[in-house]
Structure formats: C-alpha cells, structure tokens
Length: 209
Image 1 (cartoon, helix red, strand yellow):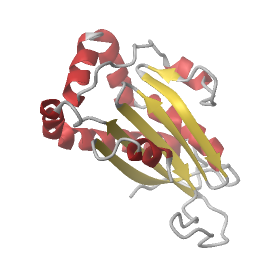
Image 2 (image 1 turned 90 degrees about the vertical axis):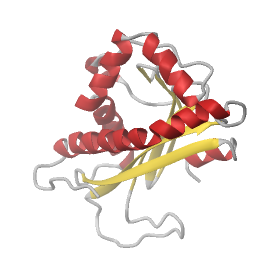
Image 3 (image 1 turned 45 degrees about the vertical axis):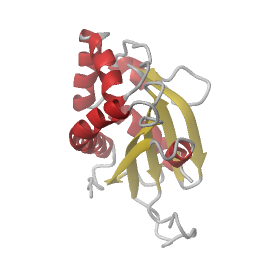
Image 4 (image 1 turned 90 degrees about the horizontal axis):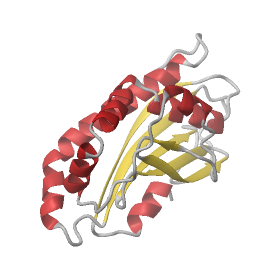
C-alpha cells in the first residue's frame, strides 16, 4: 500500500521498481514525521548526492538528455540549481516548493507509524523515500513490542513507469546499467542513513542492515 506501489501498479506490466532499506538510531521521543524530514535533508545533502547535483549542473542539459535516453523517458524535469542551504530550508510539505535539482516532490503521506514521499525526475522516473517505525508489522498490522522505539527503518526506492511499452531498445539499455543503478542506490541510502544517524543523540549511535 505504499506510494511507490501505487505508482508502479498503475504502470504494470511495463515498469521497473526497486527499494532498499537501512535501520538507523534516532532521538528518543522524535516522531516518525520529524525523522523523515531529517532523512530527506540528509539524503539530498549527502556527499554522494552533492556530486550528482554538481554533475547535473555542470553538464546541463547533456547529462539529463543521456539519462532520459537510458531509461526510455521522453523528458527529464528541468534542472533547478539547489544549495545545501536551500535544502535545509525546505519543509517537504505538499503544496510548497520542494524541488532539488531535477527531483520534484509530487506526493507525501504521513501516518502514525510511517512517512513517505514521491519525487518525480522525468515523465517516467520516480524516486521514493520512506521512514517507518520497525515495531509495526506492515503486512499484518499491530505493534510487535511496547518498548519506545529508538530505531527507524529508512527506505529508498526507484521506479520507471511504462518503460517497455513502446521503447524496448531503451529498456534494454537500462537493463544493462541496472546493476550500477542498484549499487549506486545502496551507496546513496547508506550515506543518507549515516548522516541521519549523526544527527541523533550521542548515546544511541547508528546501525544499518
């Protein structure tokens, strides 16, 4: 029932989706929504993503066009030059200006035990981020323990919609680079989780799985 699932279900069977997860220590008493906001800022301000932002800016529009062709997209979202200070000021709330480079927030859902956002970077490309209380059993519902959580699960996923519907050759190109994409996604998530953990109380530390 995630926002990522809703995006991909509408595009079946011609879509690609993946998701990766880390568990991170957080402040005691911090809400999932507050942690999610910090996760988004840690992600977009991470050293790895700073390199991506710099490349997108330096090679505009060449890199964006190459990216579009690689994933079979017709258009990539126009680039917005974004600084770390801009990201720090973002609220990541619906109806406000929440765009980082080519990534525009299009949806957000806050629940008592989870928060998630969808960013669009092309007509077919989506990026998904989610923060959730690991005590909640997503499939069955209910709490697994009554202990106050000091850990959250942070998830990062990507989706390409309707890719193979009319551009089989381009989808084949993406299939070749998909292993690199997945490795890069894991690096991005690990770096964001590290930054998120550094912002937590010194007694808790951080861990990832």
